[in-house]
Image (cartoon, rainbow, N blue to C red):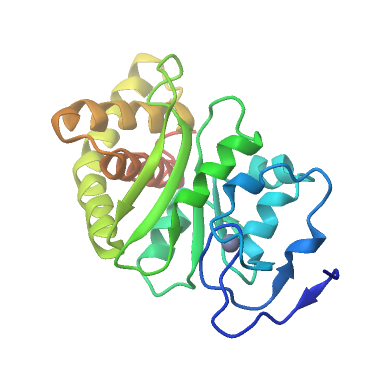
Length: 235
Ligand SMILES: [Zn+2]
């Protein structure tokens, strides 16, 4: 096999994730010598890999990419990083598929290859069945890290986040004000408030907790935190 970008055969599949192969695809023969995960390939008969999988096989700069924003959205054409609020906005409108969505929490080992490979169980082909892999999400700084794959209809998820946001927002405003008072004029931090809201949403939804509900709470808490910051209620 020869290196470089090349046009895949019509109707081809990605060797690694097994998803539809759209250009630019990469010849699987260009995989680095460090590639040791041939057993993960879904379609060993296929000769090309999609851009999303390409990204996973390149170890360089991955932690730099992740360090800024908590969401990676990878399609066969490119990948970009998003905030949780931007993820919500993206899901509310038509978006490019197939795609791999990854959400990074605060847990350790996020740059580890085998953690990231789990996302390949979670390729999204259609907005009626979105799959988002998340790792290392915490409800509070001393709680354990939660990882999983949320599978949902985009519209349902967007509605769920909106519903959680509308319930949590007034409560968060009141909580921020009460905390500011106790601290004699100082305001609580945004990160603190986000975790605080997340913890309360998770506690309230305990009986209905699924990966999707958990992820929606994480996104809703981030949007509430961002709103409070914009409004100057937290710092
Ligand atoms: Zn792929």
